[in-house]
Structures are given as structure tokens and as C-alpha cells.
Length: 139
Image: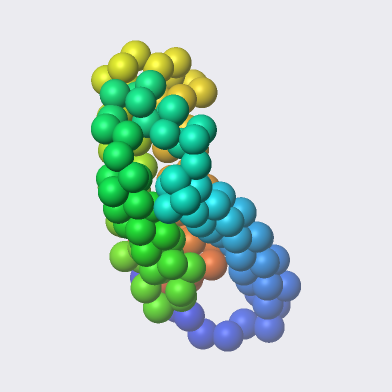
């Protein structure tokens, strides 16, 4: 298991890794908060998209999905709960992937988009959190 002791020689690499993780995480958080806010409104393009995906278009469902998405994103954004937030967002994105697979959307652009977002979130968390790196190390 990797030690978390301070090594001055590793400080620049650690700082770059932390900065990269915060930037990537910030991009993912901003995207998910914007998407969740669009569901809370609910905007006409969101209603049209939900209808095309075969989901009910009632504002209650859209607002519920928006609250779930924003709540999980805020858990991810807060350092102490970022792991549970990442797990919840992965589950949420899994539902989006299943929806696109069910209706036969293109794989690379629609079906795998949830995978791309999840990889961004988990990659950012891996860069920011030495405990996660130690847990999933190749050793």
C-alpha cells in the first residue's frame, strides 16, 4: 500500500495532479449542474428530448431527475462525499446509457456519452484523491 508521507521531491507532480483533477472535475461538475438545471426549468428542448427517448414528459419527472442529478453532483463536488457522489452519478449515467441502448441510439455519440462523463468524473477523482489511487493501484 502506498504511503501518504510528504516527499518534497514529489510535491510538483502532486500539485500538477491535483490541479488537473480539479480542472477535470470542475468541467464535469459544471456540465452536470447545467444539465440538471435544464431539467428543473423544464425547458422545451429537454421535454422534446425526453419524448424522443420514450420517457414521460411531465414536469414532475423532469424536476425529480434534475434534483437527483444536482444532488449527486453536489455530493461529488464536496471533497468529503466525493466518492459516494461518484458512485451515485455512475448509477444515474448508467440509466442514461440503458435508455439510449434501448431505443437504438448511435453507440459512440449517444450510448457511450454516459461512459465518457463517468470516466471524466472518476479520472478527476483519481487524480485528486491519493486514497483512491492507492486503492486501485497496479501493485
